[in-house]
Length: 150
Image (tube, rainbow, N blue to C red; front, side, top):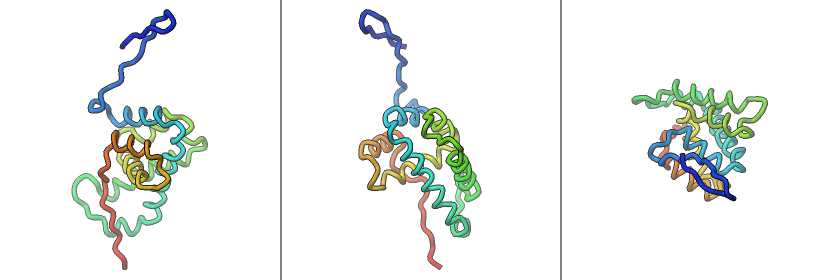
């Protein structure tokens, strides 16, 4: 805890963690604080990815190459969890703490981060937001998506 002086009063400020010490909840919380006006767009980006995977579920499950941690079943549990957050009566983006807790806690963060990285490729993504997402979460995609034409 650090202290600062303002107008003759001592203020206590929380020290921010170093980036390499932050977990996904910390990073998402920071992103929400830096870009509060973008939270609705971020939730819409997650929704877009949910819709994409749900609309193509049969095709993805049929051609899923299973190697290691990411099985189709695991991935679709992440999609379904994200969808539950999107379907809530009050949008999660209106409450940044709920937003981060739902989308970035534990394994659920895998799908949310995937969605944000995909969103950075959208022309409508704020360039500063794109830089922040890449700084906090990287730019490498979790999945290599290839649908075979039948």
